Length: 308
Image (cartoon, rainbow, N blue to C red; front, side, top):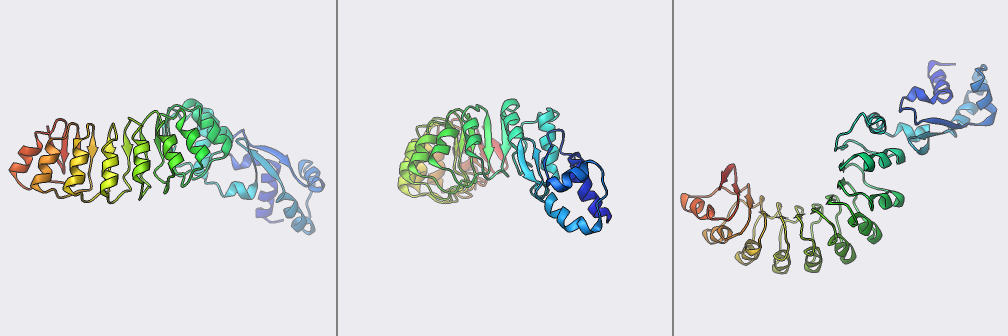
């Protein structure tokens, strides 16, 4: 028997060799070889093929999830390591961004001990996990690329700050659900959103981030002018005077970090804004623009210059 084969046999005999932690349990194996392995009986080379087939059917319980060893091998060592720390409460950080797989026991522990959960690499959840999140009241970041209407409703019940920057489309029912969110909402993966959906979301009086939009039409700008709290449109690279006037007249923080040029007329419009302004790509072209912008009623951040 080769060293590799011995390792395969030993791993199935003593699954803790894989070291994911005490939550791993040996569940089943082919009855014919299970008894022989557990009794330390010799395995002959003629048995290897049949034995490997039987061992391939072995399922182990890893942190509340049953899987084969082949399935377990596909999960990164880093995810296993962090999962162990979460379950042992050695790791009480708010961010677990490197997790690529959520074991059931780990997920339940996370929503119990963490006020801020960041899982951008998690692209799907079970319905049961969504239902658990309906009771979670912290800050949540997920890498989901799509949602059902029911899932959007569950996420909006108690989560205070919701960051779903990989969602690429939204329907009216989902927008209505997110309007009831009790905190900030980020939908940075959207490249388009209808005026109706914007108006629905405007019922949410908290900060909103739409940093995937690269342009606006007048109807969208009119709808965005009704938003309360901070409004972030950082991928927008230009606005008409009419659109900028609509956005500048709304109260609250306004972030337009993607725009590098404003006309003198637009600078005047921005100076009348009642709230903080974030214009990190814009550097005033002359002293006159700097003086006019400084009249803004709030903190002003332009390029690398911070003016009050």
